[in-house]
Length: 238
Image (cartoon, rainbow, N blue to C red; front, side):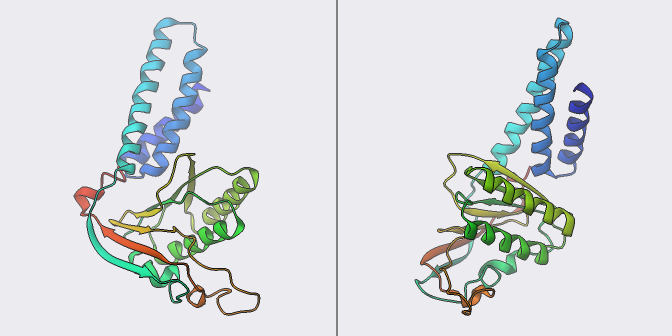
């Protein structure tokens, strides 16, 4: 257990140093938990104190990283868009595709409801756009509320698909308290959609809009696209 924990933590430090903070957080957490188990099982007081001090150090780093990633800065408003009820022409590509570019290496999606089939397929559709447009994309982190075994299986399938197709790593954080709906891009843009990813209406079988979502009718919602300068935005992904 000690060797595994140390290996995870060493890799976390490497990722942290190279700016891969989403993945670093996950490894810090796993490694710190493993090291905490070692500390609990150690009878030597000096060794136990050493391990506990290291666990605290790594957990404090995780806390700092998460606080920075969760920091909500106002930023410059690039676009304000009102999607009118029953309007068309608002696929993800049309709405915000131009902000997904080669400067994006990490994406964080905060979406409270990813449990129904249509909600999960909307996430898949977003990921398809992201890996098509963002040639340097390495990590996607999703924050959502937990919804059981079917949801976990869906995330596992998407994680495997992203890794096998493009080498993109997907991580998922669950929280009962998430309410915000937004997409944070490491190129400085934040996409806030009132209804999140799920603003499309259902389409009848064999009708336009089945695959090209520019033909789909939409539910009314507001969209704000913000830009943070590098010096401000770097705090979110550090």
